[in-house]
Image (cartoon, rainbow, N blue to C red; front, side, top):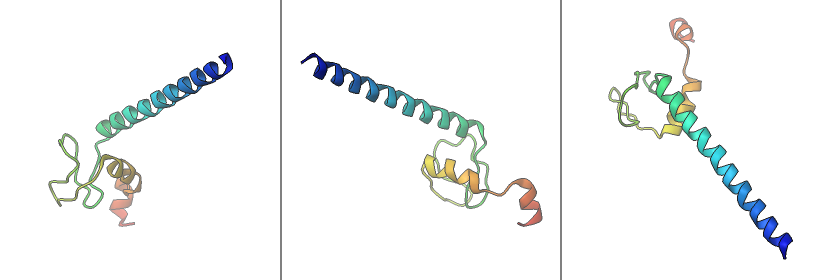
Length: 84
């Protein structure tokens, strides 16, 4: 009987720890996105300070996950200058 209770407590602890790690990762991603001066994936407009994930320049709408992941695929300033 005690083994079942101990196993249940261990499982509950594992779920709580996993949730805490997941939540901390989400908070970190939001902070990075806020500090990274995100740009619109379609037109490159600087979206810092906007209250929604919609580009006022071209009208593209994004979820925050799409916007964050899309930042990796944007060309650097150097590549943009070379038209790569």
